Image (cartoon, rainbow, N blue to C red; front, top):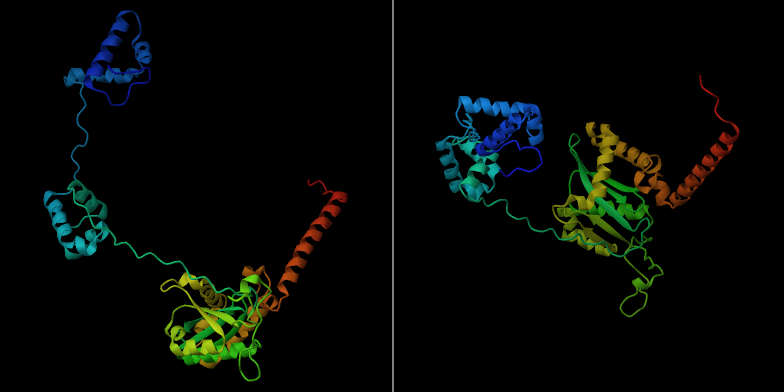
Length: 364
């Protein structure tokens, strides 16, 4: 009968059922109880009695075909309408989700995306699917430059719509120091030149004649030129931004070259390449939400200057080890972090020494 010592499966043929009933009858004729014979064969007593009743009433032990009559099954004309829809609109919509919504949009057929996909698979029809996206090129690495404050600046603009103003900001990538801001109504290379001129001047990177101060290369063999000699000079800094019109304009490129600034642009359509400045604006607008309610441009500029001081000198920044950007920018951050670590060690040792000699009192 094709059975093993394991329990009888849930679905077996009528021939196997007949054989099991005969074995049970033979065992009962030999003096076994019906329950004991069924247990020995690995089938429940109730199940065998159900087979006996069905054979007497129906005349067969074969199971009916599964399925029944699902009342929500797709109608024949709907199936044909789906295939006609796919034939006409597949080159445009390409996926089963869009095609299903196209059918309801046109009022032709109303089926779910999964139903449409099932009908096409049963008919042997393949859908084009989404067009493959162009592979993104790897992000361009930053130029080799020392990892220290005033070497890499990231900058961008944001809008304050109630005040109808655009705000530019420059942030130091290493120290997170908010270097400069500019409140304006336009976004052109003129605003970029004014913003960077003010930033370079306030950071002491221009000489008396307004020219960039040469900065020596660090003492590293990787910074030698092709002849193996030191050039003695290098660009003042790297300006990191996206690909906005004012950032890629010819006048902006000329100005940056005159100021010995290398421009570094993220990949087009990839704002995560400038995630630091996007996060910066998110914190500014999230932690000082009243800025977006200001309608007077003069008040907005005053408030932004106040927020800039608080951001640089009061707010602890997680990205630089919970010191202020002002501390990190002026090279006090490392000493503060070391002092904090030492304080934690001393506090832990003091607690250990105290608790060794002062056990806790028993609580009731």
